[in-house]
Image (tube, helix red, strand yellow):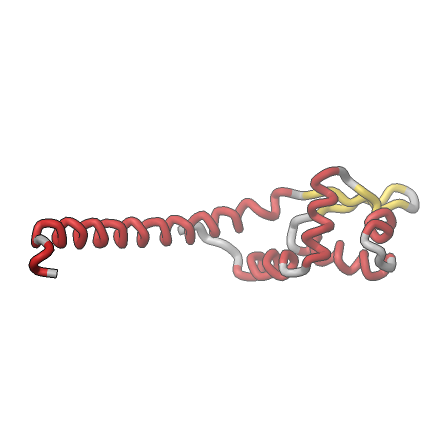
Length: 120
């Protein structure tokens, strides 16, 4: 399975656990935006939005750039690569387990059919 940083994975899931931060990511997926525009869009104080952006930056999901007095935010997809690989590894484990279970169920069905209804 893919190696991952536990701290990075924790930061990512902590960032994604908040509905407002997921909304910010959706907004930034449509277009980059200033912190103040995001604060307005989410009816939030500038300080509150800066905290959310900081959490998203720490998780590697967002980057910001300050030009003059305006801080612009944009998605940073690099933060998801290792974590997506980790999730894919977990998915492969479950898929393998379900494949084994499907085989057992099919074998039981064949056995039941070959035994006939009188043995049920």
